[in-house]
Length: 147
Image (tube, rainbow, N blue to C red; front, side):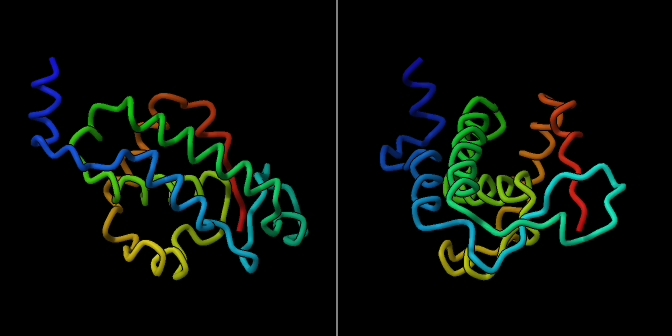
């Protein structure tokens, strides 16, 4: 069994776990003061300003918990076993931002932090979205944000 695992990672024992990258990004900051965070809506709200929040300490704590959840979730998905953990961590951060309703999923600040654009990990991001929707269909549908 150990041999199969070592063959999967091509005997590269210096691969950092996804969770470590996610924690690194979260510790550096993934929400920025100037950003808008959209609240879930049922589409009958008339005043746009009631739909937006600014990042707070509480939202940052929620972000950390959601990012850790999505990292754990991805660790159990077989399709992510052979992908670059750095790019997967970027996709997890982007998906967490989308899940929390941050207006811009991958801003310039995160591009500078990670040296990656959304294009680098877009496919992984879409797979996370697909797998999450597949495993939690009711909850994934309930995340309806207005802009």
